[in-house]
Length: 177
Image (cartoon, rainbow, N blue to C red; front, side, top):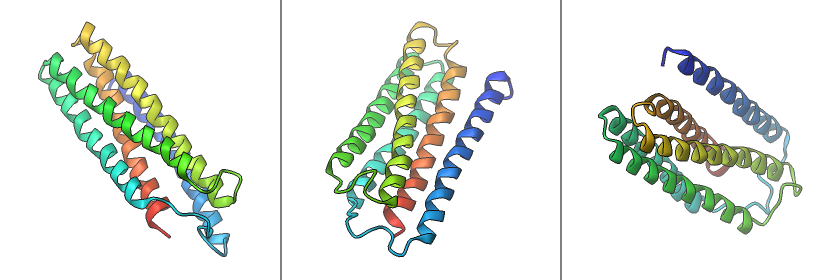
């Protein structure tokens, strides 16, 4: 993406990377100062989160299929793969909200709770924004398939970024004990 859209998306994703890097830095700083991390009342559903992570990773592959279909000029297949990506992203986000409901701690319970909800909450907002952008691109593909290729590439880059960030969050919050 060497044009203005590509440069803009690259700069935007770089700023998003710095934002999430700041969250990770805060998390690891707080973790290093804690005597017990995570606190005893934290019981995360690692298997459930792993399944949800798998769903989100699969959505990157379906987004990639949408990109290939767009490049091949197949608007119907592009819309189909975008719809599948939307569905998978919505399942991921729904699971995150259900997990929040089932957790035995809150944002004000302790430092871990604050960081957990801040990090996963901001990621969830990014997933939601990605779903909105995917829906807009899917509509655009239906109206003007050729004009939608560049926006689709930009949204795909964002979606892949969101997926990679989640892998880091999952590893940090659920696997590193």
